[in-house]
Length: 469
Image 1 (cartoon, rainbow, N blue to C red):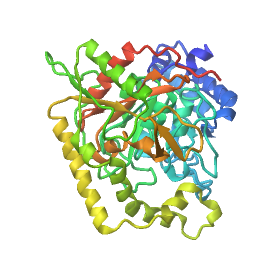
Image 2 (cartoon, helix red, strand yellow):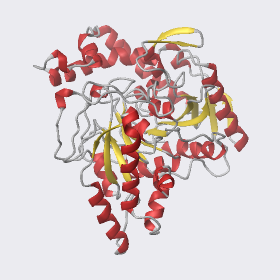
Image 3 (cartoon, helix red, strand yellow):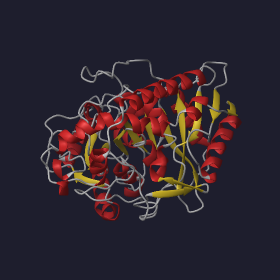
Image 4 (cartoon, one colour):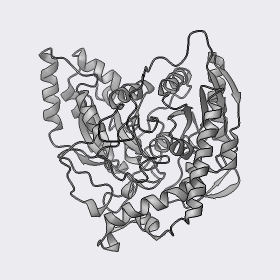
């Protein structure tokens, strides 16, 4: 039963608990045993929560007493170590914050607990959540469970490694340019970056540039993303960006009698893309066409005019550096790792370039608005390649040599525009690594991409879902 538990999705675990087929205690113990067995190889879990078994016993008593149960009652979940957890260390991947213990849960964590979830552990990340590989001076480097010599991504790399390895069924990550969607693609799970402001960022650091930061669920199944999103979405009276209540229905993505219109795009506009990845995007598009959607290849001129990664790079320096300077003031250089040092050393963006970048961001938003006048969704790559080797500085993608930061080419446009994006596996590379696709919806249209993702999930031919550890 233990193997069945650790590879079940959260929705199934909640059903087993509610029907009294499995105790929350048995489930939590199965995950603790799995962490003990495989985390030394992967280093995804950085803190285990004391008292989680006591919480599981209390959850079991509530089931036996016939109490009203939340939708995640008794289900363990994990949280990226940049998200505040009351009474549990939140160290942000830096010796500067070693031993930091918040008094209050982040809004997202509190909402998962209110739904009955049990906080199991905290997961690894890059220093200050600021890189595409999860490595830092405090808790070290996380490895991809499909190939330990490769990265599980960043910045939510601990979450992306823990879930496919059977150490967690469901987790919370954060996303600035790539950080739930890219890692999910690198390890073959699913992740959702909702419309900016749908889920409050209260209790999460850093917030700069706060108009681009998101928090979102990472999971085994699309239905788990929908279930978690239902718990997480909505204003909290603290995050001024989180103002949208909005209707949300995870099971409805189309109007009666109308075919969904879906475009697919591999390039131009994202930088070079590996042919295997491009073929996977096309295969996902063809699958939706076979199901009954109207599908065709498209181009978005705004992506071709302004490279989104360049826009972001010109904007974030001016907003990130002050936050990093404040956090590191008076600290020894030995306490800083690669990204903090790099960002603090960057020259300020000239004001003209900053204003030009702001205008380019507006053009990008307008370009997507024009696209969504005619289409319901867009399919793109998540990453231009499968998971790369640890420590890569440059990559050769489809014959072109590029800086490793180019892996953000297809994800950063959604961060700048605030559009929702969902990452899911739909293929396998010749080396046996997961390949993901990204489903993009219009603003507040999470139900559409969740619906389409559920269709793709139902016809996926991927069978090797669990890495051998």
